[in-house]
Length: 129
Image 1 (cartoon, helix red, strand yellow):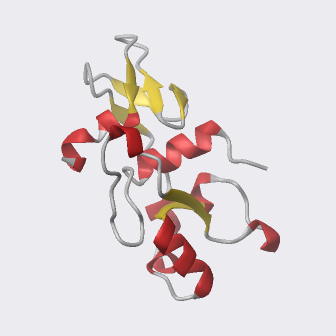
Image 2: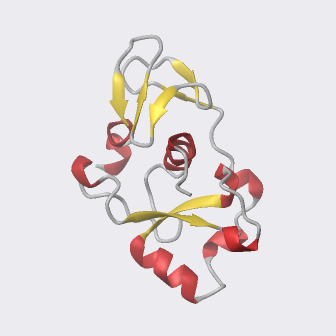
């Protein structure tokens, strides 16, 4: 069963569109999601959930490596490191948005104040530049 758009959005937001293992970033807005995968820290087959705290964003290479070894940086993360941010600022108007109630898809969000739809890549464009 695929992850919900909300879970994907919150993981992408929390991880700032970077691989949690190596820090790799997408190369341009059209590639913001290519080469990145969602990794369950505790696999579904072992009772792992699709909750945000159980999922990290990894590049394809780190995801493959993570399934070959059990010793990854990810395992040392605390639950606090894996909580999604409770709120964030709209890239366009700087309004404070509640992350769990914002209108969104895995790759964009809509600000309720300015009604602008912001691509998540653009939200992190200064950090990714």
